[in-house]
Image (cartoon, rainbow, N blue to C red; front, side, top):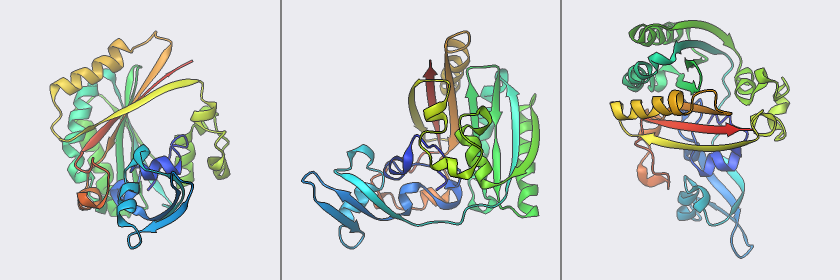
Length: 282
């Protein structure tokens, strides 16, 4: 739910058991799969669900590139799209990166509660600042009050940052994620269906290398923090002719952990957060 990377596509999102902005509300993408149609190695077209072939459905839920066929159709549980997103974004200097990551992780269990209807993450470029963006989906006044207080609490614990709030719609957020503010996608919802628009097709970087690591504890070690910050802001710092983007996403919460591990091929259900990185160069 909530996958927003056009370069990944629906197949990658579902087969890889991807996460999105609504994961803490609705769970992982693969947990929504109810059935698939696929072409096997002999060219035969098959349709499976929990009754006709539970083993193949299990494989589709997180099997990724190991799935033994080409999936041409997904039948999934849909959810209403959010209408209003209340945002509170904070920015910190790079010297606060370690403190921000550690403080953020310590508050993740509470922020992962679906009752709070929020999405939180940290973004770092090989630059001079660290971002701490947060969203609250269709939240009541009481939920917004809790949301703002929680973000402010983290920001105050870290210190040295600045925060601001604003509100916009779901498609505004999706277009922002796709690069609207950088001019790589048209400012209209229909553009999200055009694979020739967005960062993947029109971004300034013409090549990239992506990867990620799942972290299984909310207690962030000094070794992890030192390695992450030294490579992001030290070894990979300017004036290198490439850019490095590190995104730290929440992967916890009952919508993920309450699903039996045996229900899907996906093996990362115990992760607390993921460190996702993107190297790009011209």
